[in-house]
Every structure is written in C-alpha cells, then in structure tokens.
Length: 223
Image 1: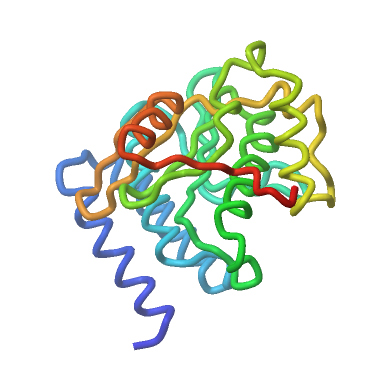
Image 2 (image 1 turned 90 degrees about the vertical axis):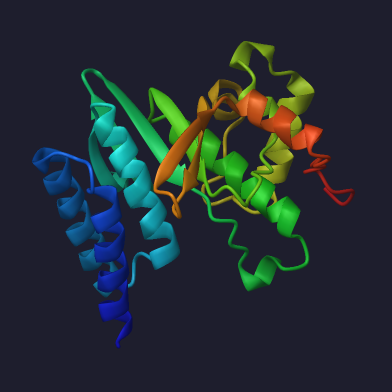
C-alpha cells in the first residue's frame, strides 16, 4: 500500500467514526475537508498525525455552528491549521503534536516554547479567538505570561518572550507591540482515539500541569 493510499484509508476510517451520529450536512462538510487534506497530502503539505487532529477539531467547531476551513492562508507567510467563522467572529486553531526537528534535539523545551510563543503572537492578531489544539499525552510549554490578559503582562515578561522568540525567529522577528497584545484564549485537548475535544482555559491548563508536578523553565541560562 502506498503512502497516499494509507493516508486516504486512515482519513476514511476516521470519518466513519466522526459521522456515525451526525446529520448529512455535517457529514458533507467533513468529507469536503477530508478531500482537501488528501489533495494537500499529494502535494506533501500535510502529515497524517496532524490531519486527523484537524478533522476531529473541525467536527467540534462545525457542531458549534462554525464554517471551517483547513490549512487556510492568512498572508504570504502564514497558513493556519483551522480557520473558523461564525457570524462576525472568527477563531483560529493551531495544532501542536510535540514534534521536534532534529536540528533542535539538544534544546527541545526552549525551541518548543519559542515556537508556541511565536504562534500565539503571530496568529492571534488575525483571530477574534486564538486556540491551540493538543493531544492528551502532550503538555504545551508556552510562556505563562501569554495566558494573561495583555494589560497584566509586565515589561520584563515581554522582554523575556521577545528574547526567546528572537533566538529562533527573526525573518520576520516578532514585535514587542505584538507580544503586548497577543493572547491565547483557549486550549483544545483533542482525543483522536475517542474523536472528542475538551476545552480548557489556558491559565487552568498551566495550573493543572503544575499540580501534576510539571514546571517549565522556558528561558534557559544562555539566553
């Protein structure tokens, strides 16, 4: 079986689970998104572990009354995973699987923290609501200051986030003003096994991580 055939088979299997108790309209919308992902896969743009999470999340948003697009182009350098519109409002969801590129194997926590911070800062400027989607087995190590209301963010926190992002992202760099205004409003815990999504507030998410004994020092000594 070719990679394309396996991708198609896996998405079809997932769709059968997602549409088991949905009406025809929801089923048709999900099938259109599935077909779009298959097309993108033939162009080597998407991977299966990412795509299945996008589809589970898409169903969740569709059932909430949103019109959903996947791999939506925001500008010449930014494409978001899910772009959802309801009425005059919009929501952007970025999926995080925890993948670390080999070139960052010696600083995985620092790199992931910078990637998440950069995503929150860049994408939230396009969104009425910005959300990160994550599988249940992975804890997101984003800077806690970005879960705060912007007005509660200190100058030192902004400077630390700027320094962190500049270590990996300088073309273009994130702007101090954008860090000040950025915010993540929601986290979706996407359970592909059960085809379910759980919403959690970012501050509550970080508190839960601390309660489990997980603490992130996202600023290493050499920054």
